[in-house]
Length: 123
Length: 111
Image 1 (spheres, chains in turn purple, green):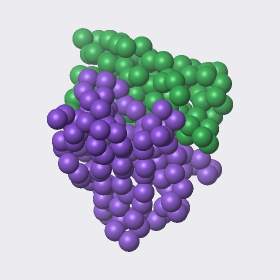
Image 2: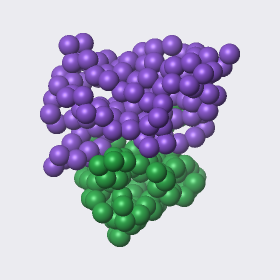
Image 3: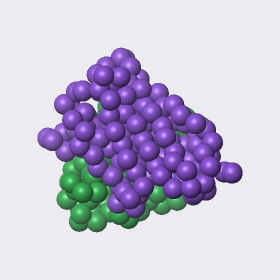
């Protein structure tokens, strides 16, 4: 059964770069049937899509975060990663990685999620 | 990129049916049959309940159903049970540049 696990620092200083990795186990990240994505949820608030990547390296970002976000994939390690630069307290959130299934070449739904990791931005 | 619009809260008694709406635009919900719904219990990751407007993943109760009319999608839960109390989020494909957009979420209370 495919599983996703987020990892990375739980505390990041303001103005620095948040870096997280999602490790995929029980299946290959190189499947042509899926994108892979990052979603975040500030405390007490709703879900916000950050961005997604295809195994080939094609990326798609939330326009509101695009200038600060980089998502990359390492197929040899079955991992994909998130970097969010110039963070502020507003970036404090639970960060989830998830698999995004594809239907007729377009993204369909996030069918498998990681457990999430809390990242706090504070000095 | 604007979030899809959901009511902040809905409630119902056990055994009743409730419907949660999700209103988007002609650029997202109205243009694609790619609306999905997620259930999230406190402290847990979201769980996919409905995809492609009305399809249920394996293992999801048939008490959950989805539909769409114009720019508004809906999630209906019939035979409400205590364990259905959770937050529910809709999500839609929004084109090749924006890709996906979420709704603001709806808190379901089972009275």
